[in-house]
Amino acid sequence: MLQRSWSEKSQLTVFHLVQPVDGGVARVVTDLVRAQVAEGFRTVVACPPGGTLASDAAAAGARVYTWAAAGAPGLQLVREVLTAADLIRRSSPHLVHAHSAKAGLAARLAVRGRVPTVFQPHAWSFDAVEGRAAELALKWERYATRWTTRTLCVSETERRAGEQAGIAARWAVIRVGIDLRHFSPDDMVSSASARAGLPQLNHIPATAPLVVCVGRLCRQKGQDILLRAWPQVSAAVPDARLVLVGDGVDREALMRLAPPGVVFAGVCRDTRPWFRAADVAVLPSRREGVALAPLEAMACGLPVVLSDVGGAGESLPPGHEAFGLVPPEDPSALAVALTTLLTAPELRRSLGRQARTHTRATYDVRKTAAAVSGLYQELLHHLLPHQELLGSPRPRTRKRTE
Image 1 (tube, one colour):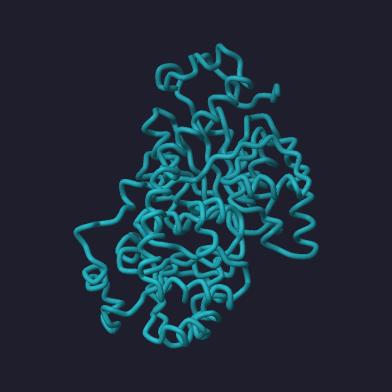
Image 2 (image 1 turned 90 degrees about the horizontal axis):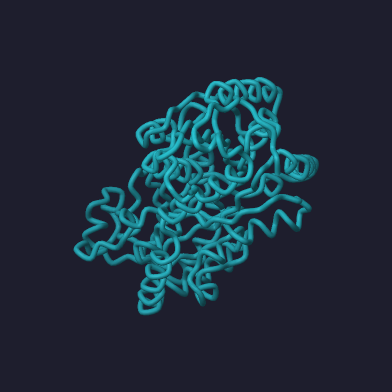
């Protein structure tokens, strides 16, 4: 029966091709690798150098290859596709799982349907660009469905956006998950104690209302929108402070834009102390699938304020939209939402308790990994000969039969 683990039969080999090497995508891949290795899979990860993904995936048990790939298509694309094809051929996987637009482009050109291929967009590429670039990205996604066994979305909103854009894919929707054993409130640590352990906050009064934004410092995450909103928050709550946790290409530009009362904390491998020190978490992204940082904040008992993009609305507990969801690119609406929460401590505590309960019931990474494993098994059950599932020798490439 397919419900048995693959280690009881042949060892299932999954090849993850990934372009982002840090941030949420890298975390999602690392979590999948850890769970898949524990289940007995042989996992291979190919990604560019730099960032945290290569070392984290290797520590989780993956065989890691360097795949030199830029973030955007360019003259190097042919080399990137050929390199990906060679790595996939050498690994002889049962299934290829491509993460984000660039890896999805290279993997599907390299494989062209000869190996079952799952594409996970992690937010649509045609939403990240404008004009001719957006037109080309959309045309590619429509075309590439012929080489995509499943398009895996992290929210119904992401799937509907693809459908409405004319992508005739075979869809699967599996929510992202977080490690709920790691992200949880610490009843033994007060907010004041958490702040005392963060040297970046030494100059801030222990009673100052604190807003934290965790994410790469880049245009996608919208920290510039937050900084434009902050003077309005400061006018209403003069002692409030804002902390940006993370690093990225926009750090210097954001530092020039930042008004008084903003702290740049830099990269932090463990964000729990920041969530435990804060009163509110915020992420004003311009585009997302579903961001992990707000889920982690909610799991720690924090209320969140998010821009209404991707699956943000789906990630909130029922009824939280009125307090935690604002239009994208709207600094004034963002300021109003933050001010409302900062000036209403009982509301904050109530929303935080509800957020904790909702996240712990809905976003367990173990459920996510099990669902992805189930998707793999479903696809291979339909696409591969029965004897191959039982461990018979398999060819390096195979035709799709679906």
